[in-house]
Length: 495
Image 1 (cartoon, rainbow, N blue to C red):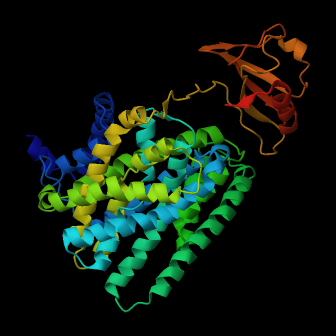
Image 2 (image 1 turned 60 degrees about the vertical axis):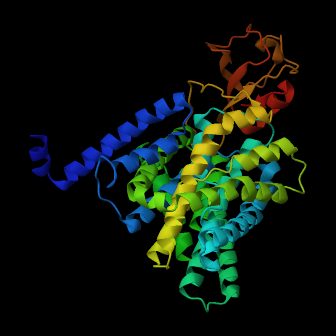
């Protein structure tokens, strides 16, 4: 009966039904995986593999063009969301460290893994270095997802460094993969032209991203759309334009999108809070879809044929290449040794290497299928070994701290775009001079209004005789000048 119904139903209906079922199954599986200590990304891949042609699902899928398209779109929006969540205040101290890991670190990793792949797999040097480049970048979606999923708080500058590095090293790897793919198909191509193209991509990507980030803030505060929901459409269109225009001029669209998002995330614009929530959900949707699709694409029997050499390449990457890249890339910094070790261990690989592996496939590079299967195996090992062991390694290195996760205040303020007032949250530290005093005795500027107070899990309506205590979170409305004055007088900190 069910078979007859399926045969009589059009393909669009079946596609929607199967897609929705796989998404729901993935969401429920991620909850179960969290309790078992397994990363959700691994479960998404496994579900895709089970639904694929060699699994019980039997879904025939081998469309590398579609996979690359979906993966590129997904990565663009995941990077945009990561940029929105990047705090410049915490990223600025690790700026040059992150750039070093995203450039020198990627080059060191591709060199070490490439050399290992040449001897382990017995492939030519160009293919070996291409594989090293494919698996070199840490994955933004994997890092953002696993750190959130495990609710892992880390000491010092570890977390902002990891998030910044994973956000900006993808453009480096993409440019290098494209250059090496071109070299593999045209062996007589001058190396100088590849280096010039690489520099052009990064410079144009950074410049266009910065310009569109500033333009995006200006437009959001002045476009005055008739419906609030249209602002979501506006930001989606903005992301697409930034990536497309940058790529059209042979720049790095990934880098442009990330930099534009960092500028937006650290600026004030209308509907900022709801837009960030929207892109967080959109990013998670793309993440699930991307890993499901990659799981459908792989053939497990082909993985088994390269299992042993791929395992050796994975061990070289995790145990040798990544630590060498981190310790050499951060050699000039004062970051503690244990912190560097943790950064080295959180070198998670995710969907990016698999997506990068489709470039030589579509370019019909000889041996590209082997590279694809090895890259997929490396990703599985990375997520399984590194992703599941992060809390344990953090405890062993003594870098784990309770996650500082402030509840969201229930009040929201939509600015007019004129930039006169803002709604901010300030936390009173123990050394604040106003601790123990009543609000009325503080003589705060009348133009800076305390609209809500959170104490622990309780929300209080502030009154003149309300006493302030260490740890209180004040939600204040006012202009920037007067809010800055309140910060100085209370020694309060932004949450």
